[in-house]
Image (cartoon, rainbow, N blue to C red; front, side, top):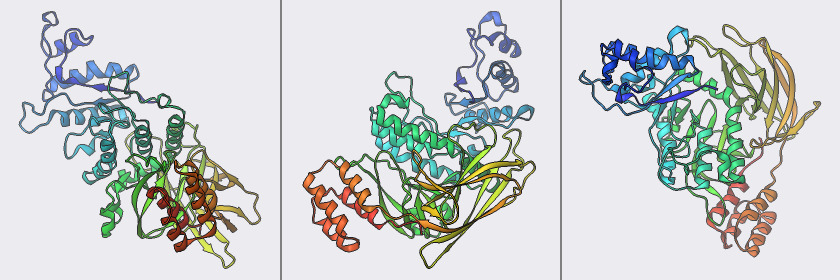
Amino acid sequence: LAVTLNVHPADGVRRHEDAYPRVAEAMGIDPASGLPVAFDVTSRAFVDAYLRFLHHPLEEQGVDFWWIDWQSGGTTSIPGLDPLWMLNHLHYRDSGRDGRRPLTFSRYAGLGSHRYPVGFSGDTIITWDSLDFQPYFTATAANVGYTWWSHDIGGHMWGAKDTELTVRWCQLGALSPVNRLHSSNSPFTTKEPWTFGPRAFGVISRFLRLRHRLIPALYTAAWRAHTDAVAVVRPMYHDHPLADDAYSVPNQYLLGEHLLVAPITTPEDRLAKLGAVRAWLPDGAWFDAFTGQRYGGGRHLTLHRSLERVPVLARAGSVLPLADALAPVVDAPARLTLRVFPGDGVSHLAEDHGEGAPAEPNVTRFVQALNLRDDGLADLRLTIEPTTGPDPLAGREIALEIVGAVGVEGIDAEIVTDELLSPALRVELGRVSSDGATVVLTGLHPATSDLVGDAFALLDAAEIAFTTKEAAWSAVKRLDGLPLAQELTTLDLPPVLRDALLERAAATTAW
């Protein structure tokens, strides 16, 4: 764990502070006078004393970096120099002294602030309207170079307690560049997950553990942002600038190399017990990371999810590197799970020691190719290329988890379930060296769709008449395609529930 403290330095240094005598002497003030030392970020003498006597001693006691907040006004003795920008600059540079990797947690100070990550937006209000703004705000920060952008997950102040709102916000936080639960100093604006009841506690906890597992993928995205200026979280139009549809989903964003996130930022339907979000899928095939359902791209659709999930889709052909849920993240993981979404594609893993100024990472490429057979099975070839870089690991334990597959010819593999991710076919590779390996799986069996079971779950959760549930379930068991859609429209179903049933009916299997 790293420790940061919030800094509001605008009042200068006062006589009650432990460091006051040394700072006063450095500024030519008699400590016995008790005169305050004014905050002056343009004074070299003050800045030197400010860092050397106020901050460095606390760093020796365990503070790792500083959270620079706004209380310093907007002017200095130098026309045009913003004191907040200067504080960000000074703290960031100072944090990199002695060869350490520089880091500061800085409030946004205008264009150019992305040079001093990590950034934050300022206080957020605890309302649905505020949550609905945050995905757009976070993603579009990339338009001014800000990829390490954060806001107060769950909201900072005002508003009202709303358990559903908190869960949806925590889901967004787990799928953001920075996951920072924060609130004002009130005994009622708590952010501890266990204060929101058993169901919410379970959902939030699972997403926090998922966040931990995603660190290899997020760290890879961080390196890509550093070397190629591709933001960790970015609007859809960054990757699809010529597609008009990419500009029509402002709350939807891309996370890392291959994930698409469509946050749910409005309350669920009271009867259907489902949240909904309008999404756009680029061309190609996409897998829901939590359900395993496969969607064809090149279209708009509305995605419906209970409170336990949010739409997170992975591009077919991608490989998502995951750490173990309880593994420490200080070092590169000794064991890695590669979650494979069948298709053709290239994915990456970037790692380094995490110390000193960033130089060159160790990079591993995963190249995937899928061959569909006439008998409905598929052959999958996954090449783990030799790791490039200055000091790759000698080797690590690797397991594959193939989404949408339930068996493979000639290999002893098992279906694994996860507390959040979709079931997958697990193949243990054992120890794989940094020289790489090629895995060929012939005769993969695709999972079959369980529309009837999924429809039952949706109908069972809905608070509607039992006779209506039975009629809808009968239609699902008897019909498909357009006839199913036509019959469902004749029933007294909440529109959200009807659309959710049709969404599920339109989803396909793995290939």
